[in-house]
Length: 320
Image 1 (spheres, helix red, strand yellow):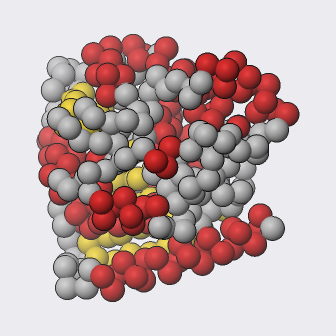
Image 2: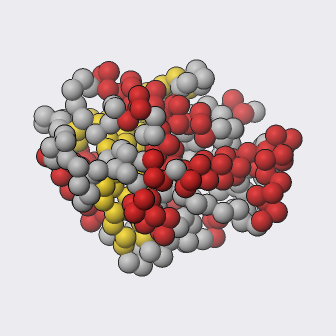
């Protein structure tokens, strides 16, 4: 049953890019591709890439999506990056999009971190000498931040970009935090009723909300026990270790975000030891910054920071 569901989702993921291509025809030429990448545990992960057809690539962005969504949602942002001569890769986590696993189930976010590092290594081997950035949204931001804490991954990176990162996340109810460690071992796939955040607005654009929650590749069921426990575990670790962050980063957050905490992003910026870092808080914006009405401006802010990082001296030592 799980394998059948994976194959169904993979077929949908493949078809999605064809639909996207039809919808943007005439808006600039890019070359896109889909492939399978075998992760740290030899599980098949669905990947996408978008490249400008005729340009010298100045850098590469690798996109790690948020919980319950998938890489295909970032096609518009990828094309915006393409228009500025950046190549883009994206990977669906285990249990997400067209990748192996039970839909919406993440047995370990450390596995996702390891897969992210392995994917980055593959991308670098295919694009020698081209600077690479990692982008993570929400829980994907937590994954990217933890990945960049490992020296062998950090040394492969020009910098990281975090939108609405999941930091200092608290359980929906204190009892959930108390029983989650044990429950996640006994019944890891059990769905916690009432812990579905679907009703919380994540964009001020009604069309973006409709598109997200009618997307068959977006998981809309209640969160599974192990998945929830993994989020609490990784965000707790990251919050305790803000001071040890040294990777160059740009963190972006909406002040009206109801899913993750913009104050935690501010704490990350204030406490991190990174020599090259930046933060932008968007007044009144919600969680899915790249799906807000001002998505083009948010995308341009990210591109501007990448340009600034590429032009900075390697020995740059002051905050931005």
